[in-house]
Length: 80
Image 1 (cartoon, one colour):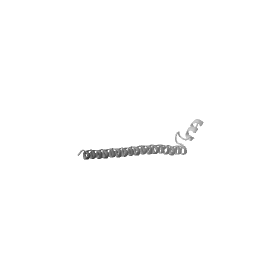
Image 2: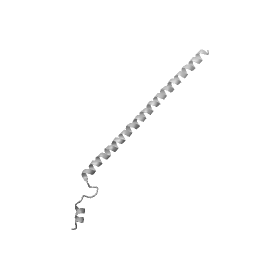
Image 3: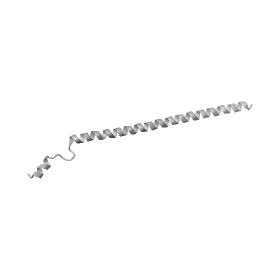
């Protein structure tokens, strides 16, 4: 057998280095998972901020409506 042919038969196939590929494969999903978790926590923070803002605005509207009702009752009571 020619030496070149022997080298091809004894060399590992491209992409078959199990030790290196498993290490790379373990790091890639972990990094992706950390990125997704960071993104999800940021989205949760934004959602919570939006809900807080909506509650604050509803409380302000409620206070303004209560004040308007009080003013209307006072106006009706003083005109009699």
